[in-house]
Structure formats: structure tokens, C-alpha cells
Image (cartoon, helix red, strand yellow):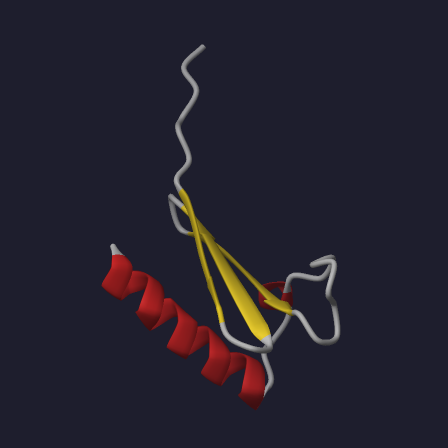
Length: 65
């Protein structure tokens, strides 16, 4: 059995945290409403604030890579 390695990275702002696990798996959390990161916001449609945060944090992660 061969295990695929994962590479995890994360960025956050005051309210949201984006975790990226390669390949192609993102998780977004609202740290104010969900400080223990139980509900991944990307599992349902994002509202305007969540979408703006996702786009902003995603571009920051892309710039780090």
C-alpha cells in the first residue's frame, strides 16, 4: 500500500480560517461563530461574507506557494 502525502497550509484573518490540503481540498471556518472549527463552511453555499473571505484567503495561500 502506498500512502499519498498531504501538505497542509492555513491562513486566517480576524474572522475566517482557510485550511488547504493538497490535492484540492479546502476547508473554511468562521472562527467567531465556530471557534472549535466544527462546521466547514464550504460544505454548503457561502454567503457574501464567506465568499469574500474565501477568495481573499485563497489568493493569499496561492501567493505563498
